[in-house]
Image (cartoon, rainbow, N blue to C red):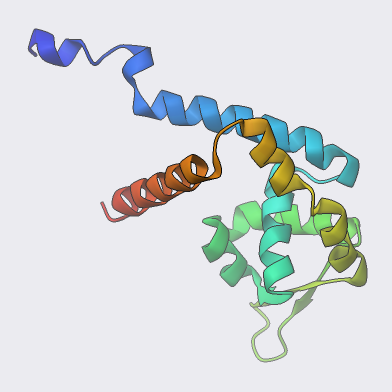
Length: 147
Protein backbone atom coordinates (compact mmCIF):
# COMPACT_ATOMS: atom_id res chain seq x y z
CA UNK A 1 0.00 0.00 0.00
CA UNK A 2 1.44 3.36 -0.96
CA UNK A 3 1.62 6.45 1.23
CA UNK A 4 -0.94 8.12 -1.04
CA UNK A 5 -3.54 5.49 -0.19
CA UNK A 6 -2.80 5.70 3.53
CA UNK A 7 -3.61 9.42 3.49
CA UNK A 8 -7.23 8.49 2.84
CA UNK A 9 -7.46 6.27 5.90
CA UNK A 10 -8.38 9.22 8.08
CA UNK A 11 -11.85 9.51 9.57
CA UNK A 12 -12.39 13.09 8.42
CA UNK A 13 -11.74 12.09 4.79
CA UNK A 14 -14.38 9.33 4.76
CA UNK A 15 -17.51 10.07 2.73
CA UNK A 16 -19.36 7.42 4.71
CA UNK A 17 -18.61 9.22 7.98
CA UNK A 18 -19.80 12.56 6.64
CA UNK A 19 -23.04 10.97 5.41
CA UNK A 20 -23.49 9.04 8.65
CA UNK A 21 -22.86 12.10 10.84
CA UNK A 22 -25.19 14.33 8.84
CA UNK A 23 -27.88 11.63 8.71
CA UNK A 24 -27.63 10.99 12.44
CA UNK A 25 -27.97 14.71 13.23
CA UNK A 26 -30.84 15.12 10.76
CA UNK A 27 -32.78 12.18 12.22
CA UNK A 28 -32.24 13.65 15.68
CA UNK A 29 -33.81 16.92 14.49
CA UNK A 30 -36.76 14.98 13.09
CA UNK A 31 -37.12 13.05 16.34
CA UNK A 32 -37.64 16.28 18.30
CA UNK A 33 -40.34 17.39 15.86
CA UNK A 34 -42.02 13.97 15.77
CA UNK A 35 -42.17 13.49 19.51
CA UNK A 36 -45.37 15.57 19.95
CA UNK A 37 -46.99 13.44 17.22
CA UNK A 38 -45.95 10.23 19.01
CA UNK A 39 -44.12 9.01 15.90
CA UNK A 40 -40.66 7.56 15.49
CA UNK A 41 -38.64 8.53 12.43
CA UNK A 42 -39.26 5.16 10.66
CA UNK A 43 -42.98 5.47 11.43
CA UNK A 44 -42.94 8.98 9.95
CA UNK A 45 -41.37 7.63 6.75
CA UNK A 46 -44.10 5.00 6.50
CA UNK A 47 -46.75 7.65 7.07
CA UNK A 48 -45.23 9.83 4.32
CA UNK A 49 -45.73 6.99 1.85
CA UNK A 50 -49.24 6.29 3.13
CA UNK A 51 -50.25 9.94 2.91
CA UNK A 52 -49.44 9.69 -0.81
CA UNK A 53 -50.95 6.23 -1.27
CA UNK A 54 -53.58 5.65 1.43
CA UNK A 55 -53.83 1.94 0.64
CA UNK A 56 -51.08 -0.46 -0.37
CA UNK A 57 -49.67 -3.79 0.73
CA UNK A 58 -46.68 -4.44 2.98
CA UNK A 59 -44.48 -5.50 0.07
CA UNK A 60 -45.20 -2.26 -1.85
CA UNK A 61 -44.51 -0.17 1.24
CA UNK A 62 -41.28 -2.06 1.86
CA UNK A 63 -40.13 -1.47 -1.71
CA UNK A 64 -40.60 2.28 -1.34
CA UNK A 65 -38.84 2.42 2.03
CA UNK A 66 -36.16 -0.17 1.18
CA UNK A 67 -37.24 -2.25 4.19
CA UNK A 68 -38.15 -5.93 4.46
CA UNK A 69 -41.38 -7.23 5.96
CA UNK A 70 -39.54 -8.38 9.10
CA UNK A 71 -38.66 -4.76 9.82
CA UNK A 72 -41.99 -3.33 8.65
CA UNK A 73 -44.33 -5.67 10.52
CA UNK A 74 -43.53 -4.45 14.06
CA UNK A 75 -43.51 -0.84 12.84
CA UNK A 76 -46.96 -1.29 11.25
CA UNK A 77 -48.30 -3.07 14.34
CA UNK A 78 -47.33 -0.03 16.41
CA UNK A 79 -49.01 2.33 13.93
CA UNK A 80 -52.12 0.13 14.08
CA UNK A 81 -52.08 0.19 17.90
CA UNK A 82 -51.97 4.00 17.69
CA UNK A 83 -55.04 3.92 15.44
CA UNK A 84 -53.23 5.39 12.41
CA UNK A 85 -53.45 2.40 10.06
CA UNK A 86 -55.42 -0.78 9.67
CA UNK A 87 -53.95 -4.07 8.46
CA UNK A 88 -56.08 -6.65 6.69
CA UNK A 89 -55.30 -9.82 4.79
CA UNK A 90 -56.09 -9.78 1.09
CA UNK A 91 -59.11 -11.86 0.15
CA UNK A 92 -57.35 -12.90 -3.07
CA UNK A 93 -54.13 -14.01 -1.35
CA UNK A 94 -53.97 -14.57 2.42
CA UNK A 95 -50.19 -13.98 2.37
CA UNK A 96 -50.69 -10.35 1.30
CA UNK A 97 -51.35 -7.81 4.05
CA UNK A 98 -53.08 -4.61 2.97
CA UNK A 99 -52.29 -1.39 4.84
CA UNK A 100 -54.85 1.42 4.91
CA UNK A 101 -54.80 4.80 6.58
CA UNK A 102 -57.50 5.38 9.17
CA UNK A 103 -59.27 8.71 9.56
CA UNK A 104 -56.91 9.44 12.46
CA UNK A 105 -53.93 8.60 10.25
CA UNK A 106 -55.18 10.95 7.54
CA UNK A 107 -55.74 13.73 10.09
CA UNK A 108 -52.18 13.39 11.37
CA UNK A 109 -50.92 14.71 8.03
CA UNK A 110 -52.12 18.22 8.89
CA UNK A 111 -50.33 18.06 12.25
CA UNK A 112 -47.09 17.03 10.52
CA UNK A 113 -47.29 19.58 7.71
CA UNK A 114 -44.83 21.99 9.39
CA UNK A 115 -42.02 19.42 9.65
CA UNK A 116 -40.39 19.71 6.19
CA UNK A 117 -40.22 23.52 6.35
CA UNK A 118 -38.88 23.43 9.91
CA UNK A 119 -36.12 21.01 8.89
CA UNK A 120 -35.31 23.20 5.87
CA UNK A 121 -35.02 26.27 8.09
CA UNK A 122 -32.92 24.42 10.67
CA UNK A 123 -30.47 23.34 7.97
CA UNK A 124 -29.48 26.93 7.29
CA UNK A 125 -28.69 25.94 3.69
CA UNK A 126 -30.16 27.48 0.55
CA UNK A 127 -32.91 25.43 -1.09
CA UNK A 128 -30.81 24.93 -4.25
CA UNK A 129 -27.96 23.44 -2.21
CA UNK A 130 -30.32 21.09 -0.36
CA UNK A 131 -31.87 19.94 -3.65
CA UNK A 132 -28.40 19.29 -5.10
CA UNK A 133 -27.45 17.35 -1.98
CA UNK A 134 -30.59 15.23 -2.26
CA UNK A 135 -29.92 14.54 -5.94
CA UNK A 136 -26.32 13.55 -5.15
CA UNK A 137 -27.47 11.20 -2.38
CA UNK A 138 -30.11 9.67 -4.67
CA UNK A 139 -27.50 9.14 -7.39
CA UNK A 140 -25.04 7.62 -4.92
CA UNK A 141 -27.73 5.22 -3.70
CA UNK A 142 -28.62 4.23 -7.24
CA UNK A 143 -24.97 3.66 -8.19
CA UNK A 144 -24.28 1.55 -5.10
CA UNK A 145 -27.55 -0.37 -5.50
CA UNK A 146 -26.45 -1.39 -8.99
CA UNK A 147 -23.31 -3.14 -7.66
